[in-house]
Length: 482
Image (cartoon, rainbow, N blue to C red; front, side):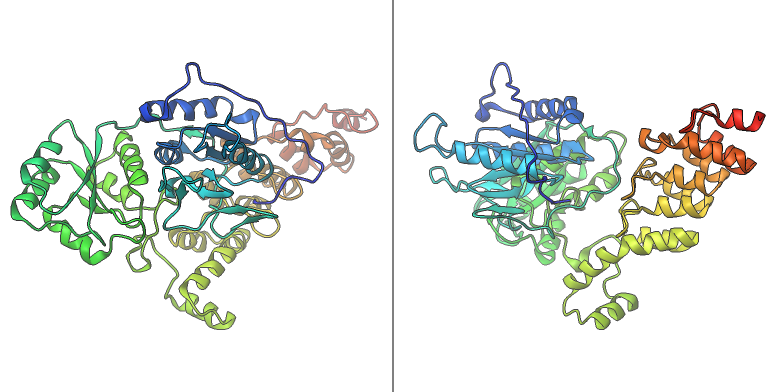
């Protein structure tokens, strides 16, 4: 949600200071992982986090944090100043107050960078000016928010939160990665020296849309490095634009290890390369596949080259577009993303496992809520569809998610007396909340009075004690014995 906090709500800030303080020019991925671990340590205590960081390496820091903070559900904002905050003309106070405002009053579950009244996606930023207050830009993605007389949130750009999984800090990162900017006349010997072990990954800044020198000796060095397992990501050194498929294919002649970086900044590509190469247990092909995917909103995939299945161009997509008068694939995608949660809930409600599988293959997040705040797990549990529940749990959906009424899938299954579903949910760690248990004693007494053994058995299976008192102090056990 991008909704602001309620008008009268007080926001309390706690300041943590690193000892000793880091010099941003000397910071490496090790220090940025330490910052991520600090956020993890205090993650449950706060609704958002602001990191005050030196500007020279802030874009690198934001990119690294965006990758190592996996399953991020809260706002993390980096900010700083061009002029030291103690100076009268410093931009630091305005940047800090803006960052605190955004982190304290809005839920934007991303690593962001706030500077000069603009909130950017962190892994899309780069520093473009050493003196002006507008030091950063996001060349290939508009700001997520702009602060002026009003706060304007670009809700279409803010990444949607999927399943409510626990925050994980991926601290296993590969430091042996580098950045090489190609230039006209670069020698093969220099390229060879740069690519030598222990180098494991390279971000290669090429010309224009991804082109580079075609000298046979330079291409040979790239080919040899790729064949021994060095992973090379091809990024353009242009501020705006992307590596196109034509040029990417041309550079790929140097070896299968060269991967298109699309419109990633060099900072994001370097951080992503370090993150992907640091993950254990992956094959070389697995790593290349991850690098070519959009993991944290760091790149824009060309529609024609997207590897995942898509509704775009399908008869269903075309029919929906025609009915609604949509004029572009982007509009059709927006409608699809809006309809998908409701379609998934409808399929789960009907117990249609095949339809749910198709939606999942088309890229639908099966943990998103529909207009009523329910997930497919809620509707499947309510309908008693054990096979659908098992499939959703295997996909890692949140077993204790709450709908708009605060109800969990487990309580809906209990009310429906679906014992097979209750067993699956309990095995996955489901439990009733304190709020859901408030009136449990009264409900148990009512079931006991009616001699509803199935209902009582369902509550027992959910872990509720039949001796729990109702509003009048009596328990179901006492009702039964009477």
